[in-house]
Image (cartoon, rainbow, N blue to C red; front, side):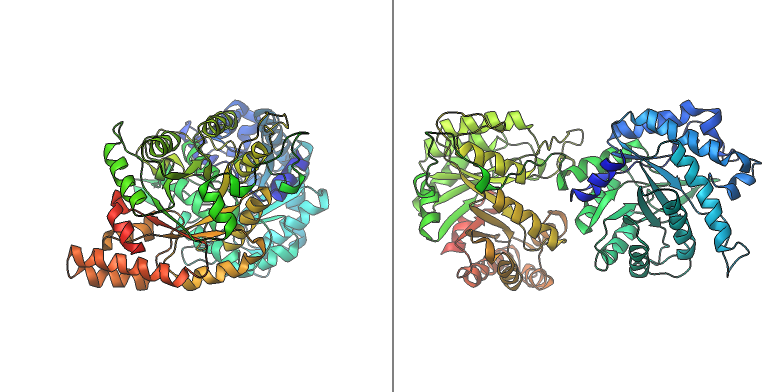
Length: 610
């Protein structure tokens, strides 16, 4: 598995650690005056059950129950002589539980004493203590090591040196910070990141002491100064005194949402520390999946060859939308929302307004914000048959496995639904159905590759399907992404996989879009700018704070605030004015505009084009 851990580091995706061991053992009735590390010898089934619970929740890497299993801490229980045995057995238990399904890292915590010059323990003594623990873990068969909850940079470097002296396995080095963002020794996140980078840790991170918000802020700072993969295992919030107990109050859903934010901020490995349970890890895994799905199928478009006798359909011949893309003409489209029920009458009436206004196509979202509405494919079929205007179908990876998507796409092609906007999708926990689960079998990159293969007459396995499909392949792109380098990398993969146009998130900052377009100019595919007419201050604040990937500058918020003071109509007029300004300022930069119809109000969208 050591090679597998290196593969996790190298694959560019996010992965999930487990959560707290002590919290779970305490919940199983183990009193705090007991040596939790000794349970590896006395009650291994308890430890094994905790590991299995985290694996079931979605953990891809689990830690041994050895946080305090060093000779110094074990000496308090008269167990120093059993250091090797305790660590070896802990590793064996974790490996038995993992059963080849997850990586096992040997957990090494601080010694619990101060090193020189602040204490009596010398560096060489600390090195020897850590080495004894590392040798036991190695004998038990760990795949790597995790040094965690260190506050002293000197101490963690001795632990790292000791581990390196025993093996060349992966080492994850995590320190802990206080509420002010620095360690108890006053080390800021940037300094600890640079120091551990130079010391040679494979992954650098933070855990314990503070909740996810404090860890998030520190990770954002660390990501600017190191290229090493980052990890984050926050507590379930800050503990609160409830009677004579300390309780961690952060809910699994809250931790899950921050798991996604941590990945977007640059963390590659996310899990939990004190107070977290398998429920927390399950939520984290669900949210992280929406940022980094489990399977990515990517093959460069130039490597995809149609079977003998099959000729892919040229872009200009696939649809009206494709014809205008190929000709370099400016495209107009309005995004409508599928009906909630089974009656499409009102939606179709709105679409007829768009057709009569000369709009090129109707954008049909697929389960926007993970809510339940009529499916995008069926909605698009109704629109094209009943109204006679082309659709651009948002097709989401969240709800279907690969085979289901393949079936959908073949059916869509047979019905001449040609224009796709491929998206990964929001996690279902963002919608009103908290028990819904995500699939994320592949992401937008993998699906782009799949559709490109279908356009060459091939299924995902490389088998001929006869006549090729003739989809026009679009993807999403976010100029305001928190991790812009990651967004650019993913966009490059999408283009490489076969994307033929891209639609941006709503643009409220033209200068930001211009800078972004300059960075993607080399890809040379048409860009359609998202334009969203705001209808109220509340609408603006909602987009700014609760819709993933949308960035609304404070200047726009303040304009809407001032207009709202004049009443609803003034706010709506100001929102439309802002949208028209955005369109006018970006029109020369892009090849089209996708205007959203807020709350289904198509006349408002058409005002933007006026």
